Amino acid sequence: MKPRPGGRSPRAGTSPVGAGRDDPGGPGQLRILLVSADIGAGHDAAAAELAARLAGDGVVVEQLNFFTALPRPLHRLVREGYRTMLQRFPWSYDALFRFTDRSSSMVRAFRAALRAAVPQMLSRISADTRLVVTTHPFANQLLGPMRRTGQLTVPVLSYVTDFVVHPIWVAPGVDTYCVIHDGTQRQAQARGAADVRVVNPLISAAFAPSATACQRTARARFGLPEQERLALIVAGSWGVGDVARTARDVLAAGCVSPVVACGRNVRLRQRLRTFPGHVLGWVEDMPTLMRAVDVVVENAGGLTCQQSLAGGLPTVTYRPISGHGRANAQLLAEAGLTTHVTSAAELGPALTELTGVAGSPALPVDSATDMAGLISEVVRSGHRLDRKRSV
Image (tube, rainbow, N blue to C red):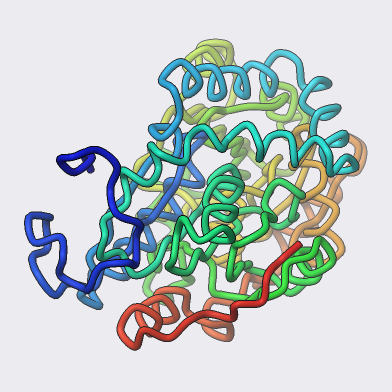
């Protein structure tokens, strides 16, 4: 949204509902701002799923890429720098992750650096916004302090896309954190978050187990063999980590045929062009692909891991990526959600056992709070979320 004539926009929450009559949605609409970031696909995918659910409730959702509130060169620098660390210098990302995990001063310095983006962020928030929702931790470090100092007068709610809560997720002023597991809830509380709620994961209902799903039809859709046991190897939209080595190890295990999803990593797909397995690029219909396989091998605990768990697929964490990947692997294994395999020698027995198991632990999809319902209740009733302040 462009700044209003006359310069800086009014603070969100200071005008009555319907004040932004020229905005899409018209007067009287219930409006929220959903702030995500195009770093990988998980943050945007969670935001898109939430927006789709809220559309059915008549809530107008304005979506914003957090990085558009920063100077333009920083967007590419952060995104490509992060991708480079993961793909070429994983040790550097691991060191950064661990250092910021232990050093609160580093997080405070990052938060202070974001203050320069306050005017630009304010200009992107409609005056009649009822609630701001984030799906990326950097947004918390800007919007939380804005909320705490009164520059933003409506609640800020954050959906944590990771199983592990790194300190960068927790910021002063954020009203409520929504997480997808009680272990994650305990971590967030230990980090100083006052109001933490366990919600159903923002995963499409298409991933839920279905009695009518036909594995044969799903396999035909991707040209996969009907009779073999198949292991889907996933590494996020960027295809990061030692994916080629994982594929070779799964093939060498001898009990399953590997299906490698390279995401948008064209170089990885080219590297595997002679691999004697099934190599795919970007997959639009991931629910069908997951119905086609018997087990998932993942390395980050990210979106595709959550999708496989929501579908009740046996899930193996193997060669997790540095930083959040290793941290997620530990929490997932401790919660009994995935099997963390730490060596190639253990891979074959684990895959054999898991592909012979009928049904696997799944993320709760009905027992926790529905996040879209929570948001709809807040914006409709004017109810304020718990105003206790974190950190």
